[in-house]
Every structure is written in C-alpha cells, then in structure tokens.
Image (cartoon, rainbow, N blue to C red):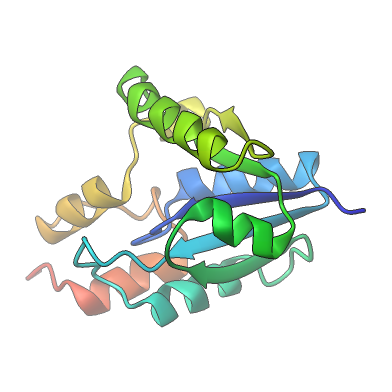
Length: 162
C-alpha cells in the first residue's frame, strides 16, 4: 500500500516555500497529494482551476505529486483518498498555535489522521502567499519567492504600474 500524504492549502499563489515542502514530502512518502482548498471565506486572486493548473505545471515532471481540489472537512477528503497523513509547514513560531489547533481538531474528527510538521528552508521561512501578493502589488520583486510561471501569472493579474 502506498503511503500518501496530503498537503492542504489555498495556494493563492503557490510559493517556493510550498514547493520546497512538497519536494521534501516526495522524499518521505510514495505520493504527495496537494489538496487545493475551495475556500468560500476568502476571496482568492486566482480561481481554483488556475491554481490547479499552475501547481500541475510546476510538478509536471514529478510523478509522486497529485493535485486535486476539495471543499468541506479535510478528514473527509482524506478518507475518500485513503490517506492518513497531513503535511503542514511551520514557518515561524506564530504558525504553531493555529496549526496545532487544526491538528488536534483533525485528530478528534478522524482519529486515524496524523499531522507531520515540516519547516521550510531558512531563506523561505518568512514567505507567505499573502505577503507575496502584497509586495508584488506594491512593485517589489518577488521573483525569487515564487516559481517563474507563478511570477508571470501574478504580473498578469496584478499590474504593478512599472
């Protein structure tokens, strides 16, 4: 039986920190399922389909990576996918409290679910999708923080005025 880990998130947009965690997950698991959340509480910059396409393009040469969207409870999605491990990134200490609460709730809802926390490379520890969008919108260079195709997509979605 293949060991599948689910890496959930909105990925709006995917950053090099996300890419780093997925690639490292591929060294640990037989399959990493990138689960793109269809979040009704947020107003994402990219549509779900755009995010799915970008992530699939980024990992087109990585057979261990599968990309799907989901809505509702993560544990229900995991049961459907026959996965028991959630991978989550911890960038800074402030991430821990929220991620720990989510891990405990997921365990309560699905006792079979375990959460594995990974830390990103040090140079990516401050990167977040929200910060990338803000810096890009203000004309800052985010090219080293996101994959090239994401950088081009950001330029199309958010003109910087230069």
